[in-house]
Length: 75
Image (cartoon, rainbow, N blue to C red):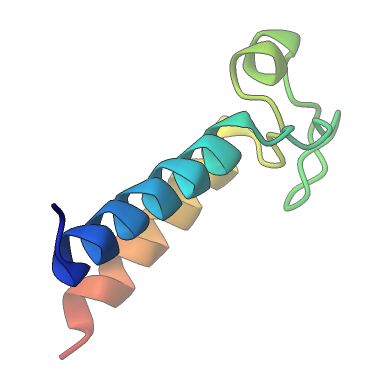
């Protein structure tokens, strides 16, 4: 017979599994045809590879570099 802790752990695992299923099966956003940052056209190959893409490769790289720089300086 399972004790209360076993039941709680089972409940947590079920909730985690449900949340993962929801997160992995949610519909992706509509791709942008033009970069939200610079306005340049986003190539079709990139739009197909990354559903919901909003930035061109250059702007995405800049965004990631800025993010990495900010994390590096954070305490």
